Length: 453
Length: 148
Image (cartoon, rainbow over all chains, first blue to last red; front, top):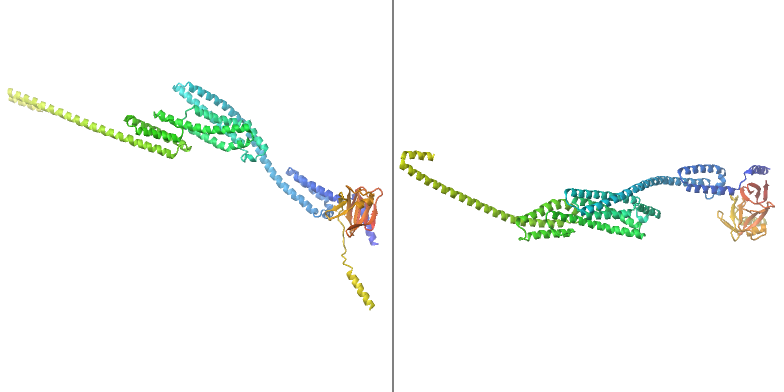
């Protein structure tokens, strides 16, 4: 009876819930399906706000299935209702962390993009300025060459020429600085190895290089500098500056050149251009050295010291030593006074006042001349000084002896002349005394006393 | 003496009859829905069993090839019987396991027109049969216990 009653209650309950009848399997599948959907949604969430929305939906999802917890605890084996939500929570936490990182990175990327836009703008501006300076420098170079052709030598003409050279030099320097800035800007974002850049990044770099005509600008930079060096005789100050500029550019080329070669590894045309630039840079270095040696040679010439041509430190050392040896070992060549003058011009005016003071720092710093070579030349100068010094002392002794003889002779002559005069005076006096004695002895004595007085 | 002999025999028979573990509940919390493969087998990964269901489809449809691309829904009741049905079946089949085989214990008629969207729920001590979202029957090893 009791069992029948329980059965009746069971069926009443079941029939009341007929409209809610649902397959447990379907409930479980739907739960799993929704859980999977949430996992995917979490994985693909693009922002923190989107993730927050998903978290709210998960909370609703949990409430929705709370009634089926018992069923799901069994059906989801080996998982259960709670562990399924823990998995989702774990995924939310992980994605949240990743999104925070992505947000930070996105901020950085945004900043870099802005920097890039700004740099691109700067590059455009620099490229235009370089172009303007290039044409201005070309005009100046043409003027300089024309001017040198008709160079008359008047003060006014020299001033104009110097002004033109200074202007051109400043123009080239400004243009070089701009090109260096362009190089820095282009490669600022490519500090890492070019081999590691992807195709898009490489294309970006190629675009910038092309838009700024970088390769052509570098070529023109080297060409103009070489032409300028060939067209002008420059002083030590100018050449020191030019050497520093070359060193600066050369260091940059050492850094950026390999990157450019990597970028254009498969581009035969550009690769050839780069090889040409590489060789032009070597030429620039040599031209600069030759210009320095030429200016030093000119310095000696201006003091009427005619040295043979030299274009290296070794040659300079040899030419200088040969010249001094020639001066020392050629007794019949020059007169003593001229020899002294040559020594003074060479050793004091040129070597000590100019070479040692102004040029040697440039030569030594750039390893064009060594300390040992300097020492060798100075030893030779010392030897020359000794040689010049001994001949001078003989001359002085000679002059002194001569002067002494002259003085002695003069004294003898004067003293002899004075002696004769006294004798003559005494004779005249004796004659006068005799004459007085003959006429009146008293008067003559008085006269004699007056004369004595 | 005769009585004593009988007592000894009875006690020996009782001792050799095996161990009985009870009560036992073999019910699955949820049905398994398994697709037939090309050879007519269904396989369950959670309960780790597989069985050839070609004879089941043949019994239901008189067609030995009608098992292809079909799903079989299986649930195990409290007493350990397996309830099986597939879409379009008119009957629910009850099987018992015996010596590496599944032997039909009962065939419960459900509908003349067949059940298009069948599903089992475990409702101890019964097994609920649904058609879509409607309850059709409550079954146990003795047959139908309730009907909508």
